[in-house]
Image (tube, rainbow, N blue to C red; front, side, top):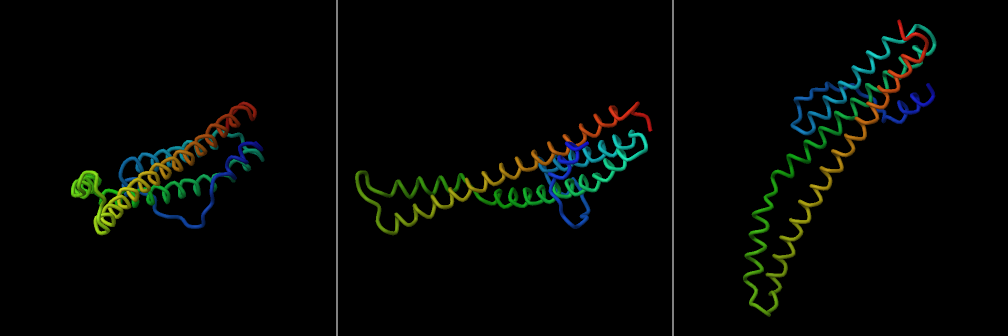
Length: 170
């Protein structure tokens, strides 16, 4: 029970109750939100199988924390969607093509003019920005994966407790 409670406590808290709609975001964010909702539902089902008593009351009390974790997944997924949408507006091929064109204008063995150097620096900054956004998208998705793993861990432990707390009947 103590370990299960610690897992539930480790799941982030927040204060509001948003309307969670997995179809409000695209893949892969939608899948992560649906996984979180499914984990919450499996947890509730596991809690229903507990025998009445203090253990059931204690585990049932952590249900609010799972709701908060699902809400956190929803927030992270919406942020991931926002970043992904912004990233789609950056055309890597256009940047690479312009960078190649700018480099081709520099004579072989020569140096770039100050304007050419600034143009190349600007194009490289654009490319670096898109790479940072890609890393942020990956990090956001990893964060969702961690939240879902924690939810699944809480579900697994609730199931384990439900069958080890007597005969498992309710």
